[in-house]
Amino acid sequence: MNGIQAAGGRRLCGSGRTAGELYLECGLMKGGSPIEDRLMDLPLEVDPVEMGVSAIGISTFTDEHGVTHVLDWVGADSYPEMADFIEEARRKGVSRKVSRTAPLGDLTAQSCLYLLHPRAVVTNASTLATPDGFACPCGKGHAAQEGCIGLGWHVAPNAGPGQRRLADGTYPVKAPLSPAPEYALGVFMVVPITALTVIQHPDPTIQADREKRAGQSGLPVFVAQE
Image (cartoon, rainbow, N blue to C red; front, side, top):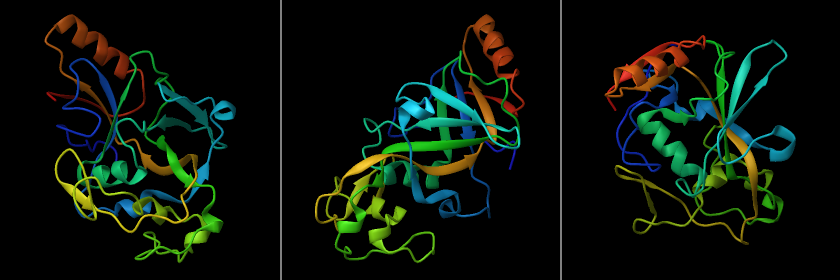
């Protein structure tokens, strides 16, 4: 999977990528595994204080094998629903901007991106009625009351009946949950980091600095126009 870039262009988080910025990516591979293989089902609730994560910036952790991974909070301002991000990633791959001072030096080809969303975990799932059309998208047979990630598609439409909008196009959603769901921050998706991409800057000095910074990681580095 290493060396595969995600698509550029418009996303729900903006009209395009920014010149001179660095992006951690998980690209799409033709004939590769479906997005459902990357979902964490059941979503894993996270205490942001304990894990040292916030809605701004990234944090890292090292697993028992000595591999460093990235924790990245997907903001509800751009992606109000967890499924908004998943469906965008299904079409374009994952591309997440990171600060030029982010801790990249310990990242390797084995590193993964752990994605969190403030509406990933339905904390009162055990009290829910099974909504119309519910099914576990990962094929695990979870019941709605177990907190299956499939609950993430039972949300309010915003692009006409049964549809939510993406930057390009829409995707279908299902009947809203009842009673009203209660949510918590959680990991909902884990993807390999297949590329670290620098968006071309017109100033060659700035561009050289960004590429040098990216090269401090153990990831495949690419330069893209957008």
